[in-house]
Image (cartoon, rainbow over all chains, first blue to last red; front, side):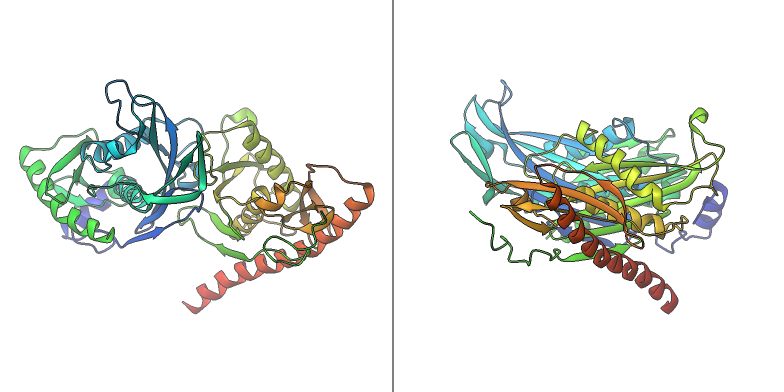
Length: 256
Length: 235
């Protein structure tokens, strides 16, 4: 699949099919593998087709924010490794990588899926900091949904280490990280007039516009991000919400 | 106290369980996973490709660029993402460990990039990285005159042994760690480092252990490469 042109992609879509034979709203095959690093509090590998992402959760003890003295904090970071794509370069995270992490962060934060009050150790002084690190291993399109799914899988598996005499004992992990819901992200791109779920590498490259929607099991929308330099109509947005709610359900099933 | 029995029950010249697989990163020109015990490395090769900025190009032959990195959650104390002094040094010695096996004269002005990621660490990460990288280079079809195999040898509690795990590396009564990389066909050494103290005779004994271990590793690497082509043939 080298260098598919935009014209070729559109021609294929006009015949009512995608290059890999999928329906417009269909995802590629999804695989989740848990516990890829025994040193992480929780970790997972997610594959969506040939796209592969790793996520790991580490817990540290730190100070709470002054306006939320009894709540733990969350930090999401992502590294678009040059290992995973010819187009990614070494060096500090670029805008794309920061966007990837921030959109995952929003889904997790705004869905309140982590019960942060239970991560308070001593009010105003000590709380657990949840550090989620995302690493891309292969980019075959739609890193966003894979990154979110991997992060949730890692969180779901995560156990809190023992904290005693001002020290964390990583060899003793007991209680599960308190999770209240499972937000998932679904990304759709618009190419010409076609709306494509779970875009592959070329569908993503040639998109006019992109919309990621994070949904919860209560059919609530907790985060959105429009990407790409083109525009979407109100009707497009409505359709994409509908598709994302439907696909979100089956993505969430994979986490159970 | 004499270290008479290894923590994980291995013989003193016994490697941990090894698993090797090529083609693990689909979009790369070559790639491999190498697991030894609880240490897991993946490597991907991208190139030969154009090298920029242009002044870095060599009109006589291609250059090799290695990047070794540990993912933040590969160890208990989270590693802050991004390069460190340690990862820079290991990238450099990895490059030097691999170069003697490569023939890059066919690729003037180009670069071959090797990216190594340590997913899970239990000592011996640079050696696992080199083993994975060597496999990935072969998988990418880069001309090589031999594989590169690497293993750490050393002395733990006064006893010479091969392939230290983390607990042995941290052994209280004294531990010295000597990573070695070799081109096994002629037993040529392309990486040699030492952390700890040893007598001249110890070095000789440890190198003998390394030679034996590298032969074993090279067999596993060859099988991994053959396995891939076998599978392609069957399909």
